[in-house]
Image (tube, rainbow, N blue to C red; front, side, top):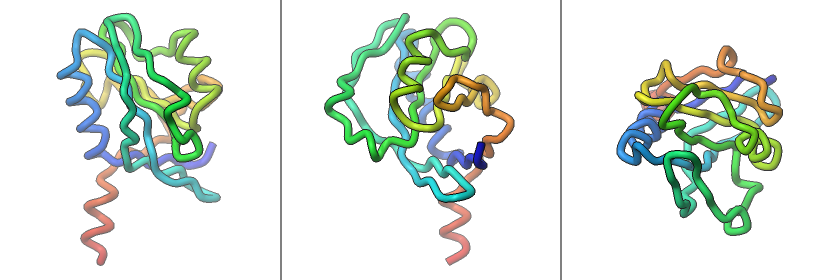
Length: 136
């Protein structure tokens, strides 16, 4: 697996949205870039979705999937372990997937590849946008 960089401000925003949507699931698609060495996740691709405390539904046909690097969603109750439905989505869409479990703190987020393998140890969460702006 390549190195994965996840923008910390984006993750903070996603965790806040998860908290505001609680007790229903929150769902978002992630954008960024992929090069030979690094997958960088630094943007949000907004898609309408409907959610309950047991799942979220969105229209995959309404999304330009080539722009999607991965997904993020919350698990309002339980662990950040992918369900069978999550695993099917992972196979179809993107390279990196994040699941946040309540109470939606950074230490309650796990990252997975498209096969559902936990890749949390190779994900570096950092303030990438701020660092780039400071280096200009």
